[in-house]
Length: 187
Length: 367
Image 1 (cartoon, chains in turn cyan, brown):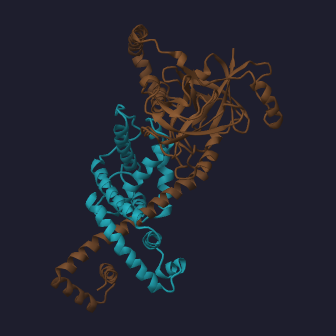
Image 2 (cartoon, one colour):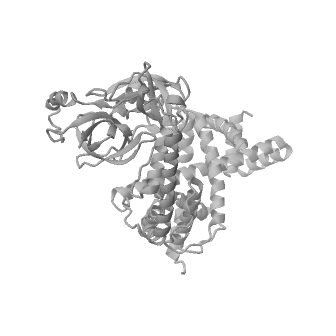
């Protein structure tokens, strides 16, 4: 089936972290994945986790300039979920690895391997962030996660001006960098 | 240059915020100073990771919000498994094989249990006292209580022969409880009574005399499932001397007791259970044994008659095993044992407050 222009736009918007696009894809595809997981020995929570992880894969792909979507989002998501769920079943139990098919599938093994690598990197940073302590953690999160500007941060954390907040941020970054590379070498 | 000033410079350089002149100077410095160059490379990687971390966190939180919104608006619904299609097909296909396998298993089991009876040394059963409570006085006392708990009329028909009582506790919010199997001996009807004094009708899901665990399920329209249990279950072997506590119904109200793990095995080296030193009385049977983290380590079931304070508990490991088997046998049983306790780290009194809601008295009506 050919991919419509609309579909490609939606795919691009996912990469831009567009809330509307996320909601549209969620609405369109969640129940398929939910049926698939629950009919294959999964629970409600498993369905949600698997679906959200597949959305992460979609997001990562969308941000890669060299990646080209060659099938519908639905097919791609389903293929990723199917693969992820199979892996999880194999991992947790000796359950037979045949699962019911609900839709057509495409090859996604490499994409998932790539995703696993990115997840490890993400976890390295998350561990480092977990170790840094307050107020550094909140400060760095305010800047890098919640995208607050230095003036807002200064107000929120009670620094007299944006420059003070900035200095504090850089001190925190130096510490985080040390923790990050310590963790990085371990991983 | 101070470390954090360098950070700022590198960040500006990487974000391409430098003026052409400054950029040129900086690049020259990089060329002549390999140490600086190395630092820039490191920072580049680090800041890239930091940025990615932020992006992912934002995306994840958007996913989470979306899921929540769609659930609120009813566009995502929890799915009830309705189609047993594949299972049924498999059943039809393999019915014969299953029948043959089951008979072989049955015969083998009979044979082995026969051999066991012949060869097992006679255990001194007199020395062990199962802690279920004879409830001849339960009726009398609870009539006072009933006045107190007027809002909950007892469901037990007057004149019913409530004979034995014990304790049980919830293992899954859907209404699954465990207790000691011996508590339910000869039961025709089972009621469990909550800490508020409300009776619920329950039915036996499974009884395993060997591990002395029974799973029961509350089957009562008045029962409102809790959202989540505060405690989890641990498979990890508890250490000697580790502090433990239990809640139970040796009388008509809930009773707390604490003690410690005194041996890793139960009576005569029984590895399925462990020995704790705690004060327990008839009626405590089926009660949960918690460690300091508020994790269930076992089910209290018996005490040694000839010794003081020596009590035995079936290890949690057996609950896990039993639940696994049950799930394999019957796909409708969906028991999920939590692995983590949300009450870990809070003080004992607060833990008990949270836990006691899920500990029930068992009332057994004999036929």
